Amino acid sequence: MTAIDQAVDRLADAASTGRPCRPVRDLVTDIPSAYEVQRRLNARRRAAPVTGRKIGLTSPAVQRQLGVDQPDFGVLFADMEVSGHTRADRLLQPKIEAEIAFVLAADLTGDLDAAAVRAAVEYAVPALEIVDSRIADWDITITDTVADNASSGLYALGSERLPLSAFEPVEATMRMYADDELVSQGTGAACLGDPLNALLWLARTARDFGDPLRAGQVILSGALGPMAPVSPGVTIKAEISGLGSVAVTFEDDPS
Image (cartoon, rainbow, N blue to C red; front, side, top):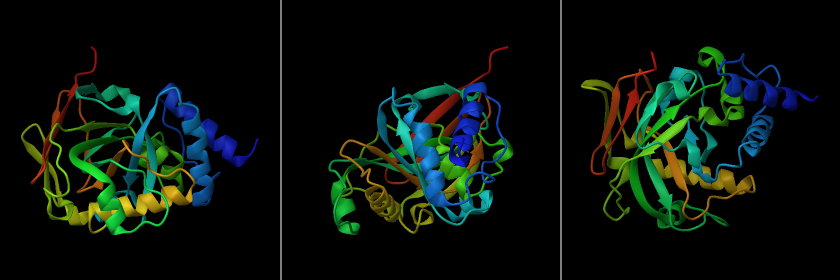
């Protein structure tokens, strides 16, 4: 069994048993190998349709929280989307962050620049990403999180949809609340300088991996501020100026 096979099995076992595992950086020491682990893990869940991608580690605040220094990406599946409410115990170690999501109207292939990615966006929508880690205590490096599908968990989209002619992502400000308590805040500029910069990075990276972004996909462009913990019984609401809001209630665990 190769080191990549062992990493795949370690993460798959953590996901299936609900018991976080030790990091996989002893097995996966470079980013291309980590993406191969991610690819093999995601191939096991192809029964759920792919709905898009997520960009992770775009915010300096989140990079500092996790001790990494570059973005990554993961795959979104239909069974990851939640609407209005969910259970915190669906995941192992959930945290939450507020983002701007883009829904694409066109494939992103060939030569790509800022104008091309902007033109490919059908609309922007407020989003919450409920991140998770199969690795115990979030003890991750860049190879750990890449292998673990960029620490993907669940996501929720708001109801407001705006074309980029009516909304400028870099100018947005974000405030996220747990019930009435402010738990995170940030700006569009906190996401690689502009959420559209993050989309361009992903579009080029996905193209170079041979799996380009496609029309209709949802792209979570990255956190606008620090992650916050998730607790049962709490409603998380994010307000993004100029775009709208999105909320998820985490139902109490069963007694």
